[in-house]
Image 1: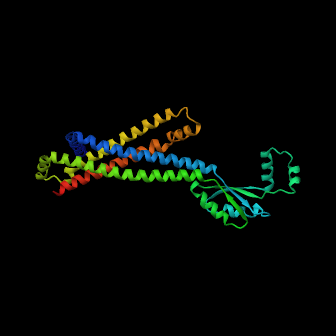
Image 2: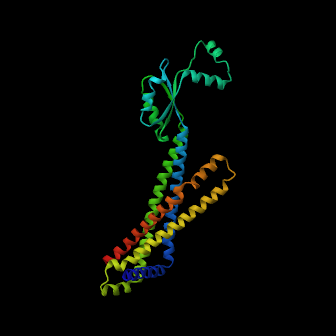
Image 3: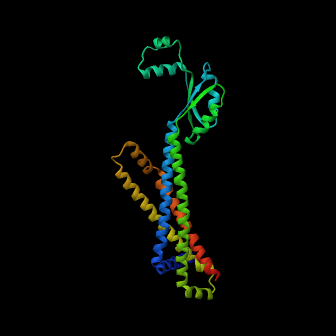
Length: 300
């Protein structure tokens, strides 16, 4: 127990000494990681918000399925429900549809209107809801192939535009994250390497007395981990501040815009999952950068 405490104290002391020796390079490494994780966290938040918006719209969008004349909806109800991607299908008989149409047009006398036309001109139909917005097009195509279906109609332009926007943001965000990840790893590697060179004499003495490479270079790996965790904390703090500022600025905006922002503020992923992801990502970048530095030094 005492040995473990002594070893922990030694590692902590050596890590702090290394950080002090780093000087301004420490800030260069931390700030680079912070920028990387800020961009990564912002892209995650936007992706989550668009995902939530698409889900909400998907719950409101329906596929209208019109049957051929003299085809009863009950005969196709089970087939429509069994179509892959269908959440539910509501039957609207042509009589109900005719009454709804006349009510919308302000015509109260259903019988008189039907008599003037000679018969009910409408057909049975389904109102189909899909399991997710991405399935709208494929579900509509599958239902259109069923026998007895005259027409399938749905509006998905907004959903498709949002999906395109989400894909574009995801692709561009991924490219930026990859670039800044490489830059962050390079900066951390350089920083750790300079610290190792500054303590070269101390390392040589430790090697002469029989210390292993693991024991010598572990404090430098901990320094890289510190850079990553510090950058993650700064990035999450900046994201939280910006999100709060945007929320305050949008207080007097239309309900739709405010609901989108409030939805992101109230999203538990932003408060619990996002900081965990940033910390793990930052620590991983720090460890990788420091390992690259000490591995090269250990081989010399």
